[in-house]
Length: 317
Ligand SMILES: Nc1ncnc2c1ncn2[C@@H]1O[C@H](COP(=O)(O)OP(=O)(O)OP(=O)(O)O)[C@@H](O)[C@H]1O
Ligand SMILES: [Mg+2]
Image (cartoon, rainbow, N blue to C red):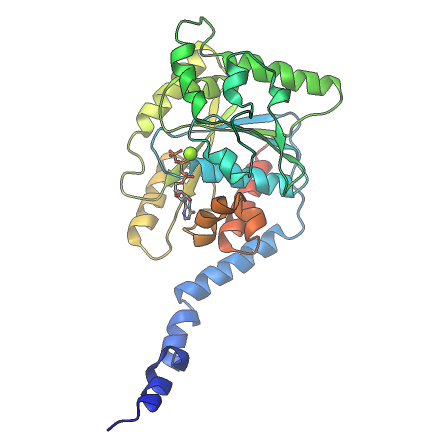
């Protein structure tokens, strides 16, 4: 009879990878080794580099009417990355799902005031802002499900499309009079083309479109670009798509690489060179009310968002 302990020693989970397996995992060219080397290279290139401070507040709408492509994840993590570098950043949660509020650890109970109360002109922006407990330069204008009522309640209002701009701009001007300002205002849009994202596109200077590196990545983008054009023609002549960010990229699939190439062909100037990898740390950080930047700062997801934030900041005027 064979000795079960002997078997456990040679083939059990404690046996460790044999040299061949090891080489496949971390040898030159292996996926793990490649991604570690890439992280190291990114960290080196970021080094102690300070974020470029924009000459005026940059207001960026993070939009894509396609659901689940990484809008919220990108909005909160880019914001946190910029704030971790000493910039002052406001995230506006323009989505009744309230995911950005959750990810930034915002307090939300029955009495919490949110974007709904601002858009219905009950209170000013200052009354809803919450400061992040993790990053002092980061603020959130939270939202909850009542924001969905805006679509119905404002339908007759002549200024229904411009409410966000009309409430945000005076608040920013009031800050300026006190010699203060946000360097970035990042607006997290919902996956629709309702009044809420329209308001964001009219309030913003720029649009950042997260694109998931999957088969249907470019589907629906034409509609989004048309809506952006509509916002530009009607109300916001300066609006431009400044940034495309590839999200949930996988180094190990041809599809991911093909989609990335395709998007880069369409948007050569706009697409950031950094791609955000699929990462467990990114996915689990919201459940702790944190961004990956504070939850797992050395993880490849955090490093990628930090590098993307640097690229975004370098493009400021
Ligand atoms: N790089 C990533 N790696 C792993 N998971 C990710 C990554 N980016 C996003 N996710 C996960 O994918 C899901 C969708 O992401 P997210 O909520 O950011 O998309 P969204 O575009 O804001 O969605 P919605 O359209 O519903 O607002 C979430 O569960 C998120 O945690
Ligand atoms: Mg979202």
